[in-house]
Length: 209
Ligand SMILES: N[C@@H](CCC(=O)N[C@@H](CS)C(=O)NCC(=O)O)C(=O)O
Image 1 (spheres, rainbow, N blue to C red):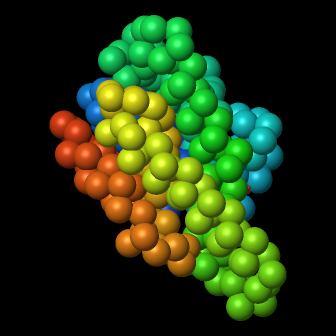
Image 2 (image 1 turned 60 degrees about the vertical axis):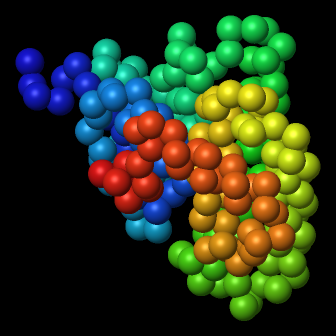
């Protein structure tokens, strides 16, 4: 048996919030894994070899200890945290966690993560002002939704820290890199600190390696 067999293997780009979600979850659970740096800018996710593992050609991609693959960061959070306190037992509370994870993928990530990608990596913000304006408006709207919720509850789906907090933390904590000011969202800023205070929390740079 080789050394890497029997361990999780996480293919990811260390600058990606989606990849950070899975890496942070594995660290919080204390599950050892091998990180496989996969450079999206070099199109390493679009090779024939990678597409055979994930037909969607994207990271993160998790290989389970038994060899099977799982794509989609939030599916990874739900799979890895199965049976833990980070997924509520109560059906309604669990549905609220899903609610915020779907919000993250449909409303938050497509604005905030994409704006950050354009500013920080593609560096094409100046050549597409209309798209940047739309992403910025949509991103602030998403932050406004979070601000309203976090003004009422300490964590996004209620009183307890859950996988929904990990999903939304990943790109909110680096939203300023996409040009978003967080100062106008004090409840969001306080929540970021609460997430960072969770035992075992590690930064993106520490998690993704
Ligand atoms: N919904 C997916 C999004 C994954 C995604 O967009 N991954 C980006 C990096 S953050 C990627 O691999 N891009 C490379 C490409 O599209 O070629 C998830 O949550 O895992």
